[in-house]
Structures are given as structure tokens and as C-alpha cells.
Image (cartoon, rainbow, N blue to C red; front, side, top):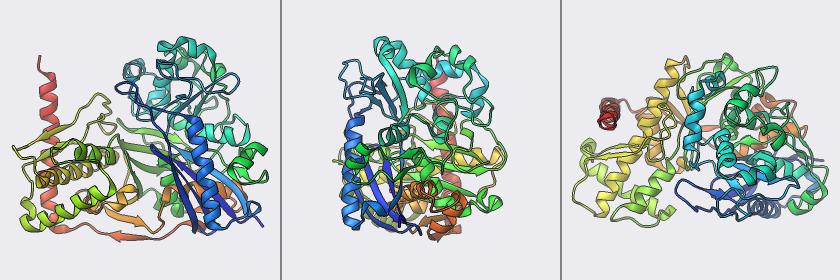
Length: 527
């Protein structure tokens, strides 16, 4: 009896796999690191063969830890960052860097080499941009593809496949080049609500008129909860599964997390529309759903059926959050490598200093967290971070003050995005947080108190994996649809309500936050 599913999540630095039963219980999980190449400023590359090997290793270890036999697994699903995988006509890796080393065939989501190309896309003012907040981000696939064609024309001529990383995984698992509606709608300017999803006039305008043929991109897409096919014999052997295991269409990792924490509301559309998912890790993504299309500036989307059937998805985001805290720890005079232990020591000391100094702790320090651009709500990939209020102090306590105020800035950035969403017509009051930020008590407190939202931390140890497991459960026939899988597999959560006593404090901080944005704009406007 096939009653189990496998979920694979590919993040920025690792791949992890988990085995789930039909009730959403995680039986076992395993992680494997993945390599990254940083050959130039703003360049970041993966090796897709290394990713596949890491996934296979993680699946086998998790299977052994769970004591699972291959014939008990109904389906496997993949979620991944929105990284671009390039393969030649024979399906072999094709280099995406100037040095031409073939193993580096994947442009990582956070790679910002295509800033000029993103600006060009924005300048077209094409209607497809109404589904990208009217601004193109260099983290999307079209600017990356434009960069490849402009800067490595010989590689472009040799190309035979272009994949979002999640679609590469399903191709590697099945041999099918079918694409997920989730990936193409969210990252490739594919309009799933149109009769023809690809807008050829737009592709011609940005110099990618040959993209569909060059990259073997299909006209039709597969919905979340569909099935790509079954594991090939080679993939089954490498994964330690069997060829009766079905493969679900890929998911963008943040949307898998949104499904994991909000899937239980899918059968109640009115209630779903009041819920917001915050997936916090290296970066942060804020995801909401609605029955009606509600476009707005600086938001990614609305995307039709990127997750739930008949439903629009909108996303706001911060390009560096966990990565920003790591950076602060690494570059400060009292800093060091940002390990989990180091973060723990800093957080512990911050709490001691807050207890000692009260609300006045570090209140003259102010931070704008745009160290890797502002994804939302300003939609400015060129934006830079700001720190105001530094003293001639390089002590550990000085690092703790800066760390705390950076956490405050991250939370105020979420509040800024929520204000934008409210202006666009979203009526949100509950924030479901998942990802690595759940393990940071400072952020979890601030997400509640600084935004004024009711905050829920899910019981499941990994909601991103759970969301991918829900999609796999539908692909494997364990449930008839995502609403049923969401109801059957969702976990509960710990609820936190905002502290009314801190409201005035964070209202003042938010006013200062917006003022700092105005001052930055004034400085940059001076000639």
C-alpha cells in the first residue's frame, strides 16, 4: 500500500528531503549542502549535477532513517528557489559564467548580474508587467535569460533547455520536459489566466523571440497537484525509490511554504483571504491569496493558479533578511562567522540588554535593510542599505545593539509591505510564519508587535517541506485535491497576539523608518 510521500526542498545552501504519511506527519528528514560559485560581484551560480546528487543523498538517508520501503511511496515532489538551469541540446550542463566552466550551469535566484536587463524590461511598460508590480526584478528569469543571450551568445546558440530549478528536478526525475504552472507563472512572465500564456510580442520586444524553441518551453503548464509522470528507472535507482512513484510538478519554495501553512484554509476561501504566509530564511517572502485579481505596485503577481485552482496569488518580499543578519555579524568589529551558536549568543545578550535598558535600548540606531535592493514595496533592485547612529564602539554589546535594530528594521519592512497590500485591497490580519526565522525569538516577537498582526508559528518543523508533501499527496492519489490534502495534512500552531504596551514605541519607529527612506531619496536626488 502506497501511503507515504517524499518532499524535497532545495534552498540557497542545501537540499533537504522528508518522508510524510498521509496525515502530514514528518517521519524523517535529511539535509545535504550544495555548492555555490561567486566568480564576480553580483554573480552567484550552482552546479545542477551537485544539486541532484545532494537530493539523492538526502532522500536515501531520510528513507533509511524512516525505515521506509520504496513500494510504500506514492509520490515525490520538489520545491526550489527560482534559479535558472541551462542545458545544451543533449541535456548536458552548459556554463552560465564568463570563464566557461561547464559545471556552473545554474544562475542562483539571488544573482543580480541582470540589473540592466531588468531595467530594460521595466522600460517596455508591457502589460505583462501588471503581474510583476509594474517593475521587473533581476531575480526573475527573463532578465537572466537576456543577460545570457547578450553576454554569452555562443552559449545561447548551444542551449537546448531552460529550466526553473524545480522543473529541472522533475525533468531529471522523469525525463519529461513538462513545466509547472507555479514556476512559469511566477518567474517567467507566463500569464496562466490567458488563452495563450506566452506573450510573443513581449518576448520579441526584449530580444527573446526565439526563447520558446531554444528552451523547449511548452505552451501548456501543469497545475500544482497534477502529475508529471513516474520516476524513470535511472532516477528511481539514484533516489532509492521505484518506478511506480509519481512525480508532482515543481513548486517555488516560498509558495510551498505558503501551501504548508495555509493549506488548511483552502476549503474556506473567505477565511483564506485573511491569512498571510511569511516564509523567512536567507530572504523573506510574504504570500497572500484572493479570489479576485488585485494588482498593486511593487508586488509580484497577481499570479493565477500559481498554487490553488481558481485563485490568485500575490507576493511581497525582502531580498536579504537572514542573509542580512549574517552580514551584520560577519562585518562588525566584534563579529565572526555567523553560526547558529553565534546568533544564539547575540540573541541572549540582546535580551539581557533590553531587560536592563528597557524601551530606550539602542533607540538612536536606525537601519534600512535594503542591502540587496528593495523587492517590496519600492521595487528598487538598486536600493542600498542605511545605518544611522553608529558610535566609536566595536564591542560585542555594540554588535548586539546593531543586531537588534536590524531585526527591528526587517520587521518594519514587513509592516511596510503589509501597508502596501492593504492599499491594494487585501484584508489581512493573521501572519503565519515558517522557515528559519521561527528559531529567532527576536524576529518572532517583532513580527507580532511591530506589525500589529496576530502571528502563528506552525507546529510542523518544516512547513515548506509539508507544502511540497501536500502537492505530492495529490499527485500520488492520496487526496483528490489541494483543499482535501490541506485539511488532511495541516498542523496546528502556536498563536501570539501583539503587545498593546509596545504599540506606541513601534509606531514611532515606523515613522522614523519612513523618514529615513525619504532622507535616502533626498540624498540620492542631489546633483
